[in-house]
Amino acid sequence: MLSPHQVFALLELLPFPAQVAVLLVACTGIRISECLGLTWKHVDWANHRIQIQQVFRRGEIQNRTKTRASRAPVPMCEALAAFLADRRQQTPYGNDEDFIFASLKLNGRRPLWGQTLNADFVKPASVSLGLIAKGERFGWHCFRYSLSTWANDVTKDITVSQTLLRHSKPDMTAVYTHGNFARALDAQRQYMSQLLATESVSEVVQ
Image (cartoon, rainbow, N blue to C red; front, side):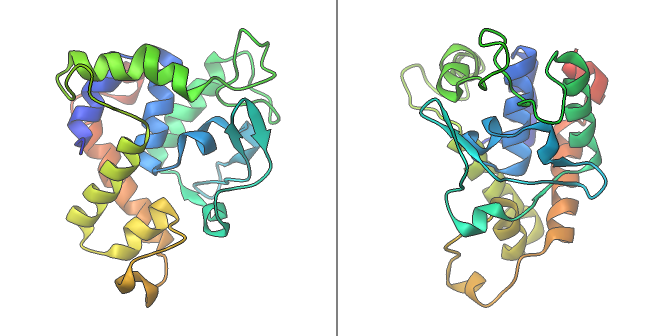
């Protein structure tokens, strides 16, 4: 499991596109295929949420999600919205139909590859920080697992983790509960507050 402070240390070593991808996955729990499938029209700025409507897998956009529950809205707190707004200012692909993580090499026609971002930037940075050992497996799902563990430890409310991760098969306790978007959004604010405790948003993304 990675703590918010460890994720922050990792962010400092990453170039801007990989940095924002890690931040988005780490504080929302979305899958990397969902992250890379996002376009700017999927960001609902006014209602503090991100819509998951498609995924990027095996080099293709697929107009479906892993499960029906995966289409539930993803919380987006103010600090995360600021990061995404900054990303939109820096990319030449900032129109509503453009991919948030558009590939410059492909002239924005496809997103970046998650495996490449991890192999070239995220995993090497994790090794250099001592978060994992050299040769140890490390993937995007680590961030999803870490957020779920952190949310359960902090909130003691399984509906928060259930809402953040949009579980299609909740455990027995959650079978009798409902998701709690408001509390999930508040938990995300707490996570971002811990992550950014030593730096301002503008300093992190420069």
